[in-house]
Image 1 (cartoon, rainbow, N blue to C red):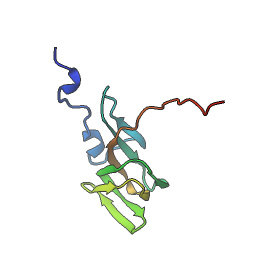
Image 2 (image 1 turned 90 degrees about the vertical axis):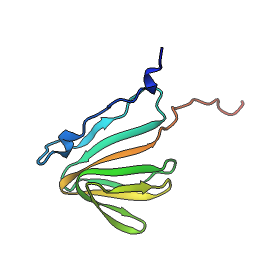
Image 3 (image 1 turned 135 degrees about the horizontal axis):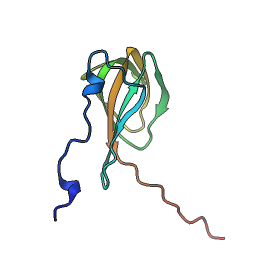
Length: 125
């Protein structure tokens, strides 16, 4: 019997987010939840002029693909204009801030899956 995880399949339809005049609420629109996966992926939407404040991802490289709207990514090297079709590599250790444009911003992020929380024994005695 073949392993179901080894079968390519559609996991989400982005058309509702991409449609002209789409009124998709802000927040996580979709999250990859396939069992046994090695990747994490999310589709997020920021409303008009919403901001993801400055943060640093210390452990993971992230691929960010803009799927709708416009915005700006502010990093150590200045601001990068974002529009549908823009693909960014955000290397681990990089600091960034995202600001959506007047029509909002929809984007896909993909990165290696974080390992699950592991409880380790404390120091001896």
